[in-house]
Image (cartoon, rainbow, N blue to C red; front, side, top):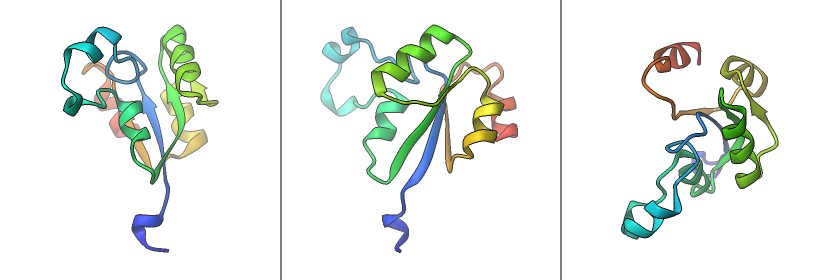
Amino acid sequence: MCLDERVLTACVVGCGRIGSNTSEELRHQLPDGWFPLNHIEAIGKNKNIRLIGLCDINKDNLQTAQRTYKIDKGYLDYKKMIDDLKPDILSIATRTSGRTDIICYA
């Protein structure tokens, strides 16, 4: 199998605005060339990447993203998600504080 045929797995940590929730207001204000504007949609645009898990410390954000993007695996703890799913790619869409810990753990 060629590398370009391999399907990689991905998870997203952070299901807020930049992770999953592009507002309709932004969709109407920005040119098409700026999209996708969130991590989940960007991953979804690549046929060689399969999104397998989401994580957010805010349960409401997590559940909304899971429903919107039809992702079964949702976690409140990024360490558990990484340990359980072992993704090839980890997309981190969190605030700066704490991001280093996530990167080092991954």
